[in-house]
Image (tube, rainbow over all chains, first blue to last red; front, side, top):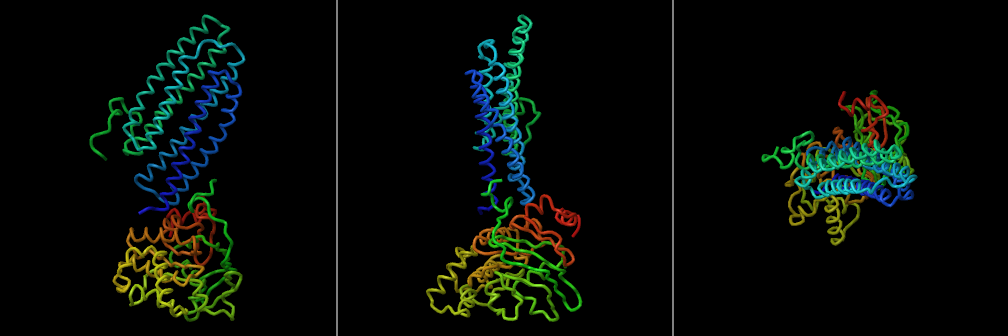
Length: 229
Length: 264
């Protein structure tokens, strides 16, 4: 039986995906602003952050209403609680994009320190993780979601390596300190985007398998347990 | 807040068509309703909730003067529907009850066929042409989400239907004469969960065409189906607001205690 409540759940999903789209776009545009050294692009990212904040508030209010008025259970309850968590992660992704944009504006006041190869690679990996996590959410694919979590390690590695290089750069050349610190912040922000994408993936697994894989070891994450709950 | 959400978050701000003004009701010397003032909007679902004996069914019955059938009932104050006081001396109570239909807790189909359960009232109201009767019976049964289940046995007894189907037959009977307002006094309390869910879905569909006032002792039901909720206690109206407000952040502690199950 189709319920009126199902329409509300569909609307919730739809709004969540709209937020996701904005968050992905913000990260993508912030990277673009870095690679193109564009203050204009960076400022646009900063200005859009308030939209993501407003969407987070709206989605949270929707979820609270649905919990209060419909007493959902089972998969409906998991969808709503997961939506609240994913909303928070996406809003934080938007904040990271804003952080990147602010650093770009500072970086643009000086010549480019070095080609942004590692940053670009991190950005692409983090964005791919985010995209795949959201695809898994849309298509109910918990196997795909599980596969995203270990990819975070690769982004962490690049960030670690880049941080080492930037520290060396600062030691060798004190004139590079400001730029190096800004790049380090950008690298950290991208590393956080990847973390949030991994969080979303874990939440998708919980939504579709009713299993909490947060804080699990790698060999517990990669495949679903053989017995359903 | 997006205004395309269904009732759970945004309550429609339609015209107020029922105005209850300082209404008190006495059963003999006992005062059952105390100075109730309330405005009910058109084409929304308004729920009356409260513990047993709080007066919610008594107030519901005021809206179509069913309390007139009880001895020793006296009313002070007024109740206006569409701008007219329904307790005026010139009011035709039969006409009033045509405009304000009612569905009761215990379904009460006539001991007649499914078809006749609906056609009977239509004939009383002057419809005689068979094609009109057939069309209206079908429309009513469709509106009550019962047509597909009974279309091949319209001339079988209404009493042979399940409890949930009988209740939907009673709803079909009520909507057949196209009332403006539908009063529902705990319409699902005697039904199993699946039948209850069907009645609730039906209420949400019907509000497009009717103003619905529902009494329920099931708070979750009130939360699921209504746009506005009125909480009563000991004959008094304690709080009246959008259902969302009443169930997420009620203004009165008594309301909070009741909806959270701390009393009642």
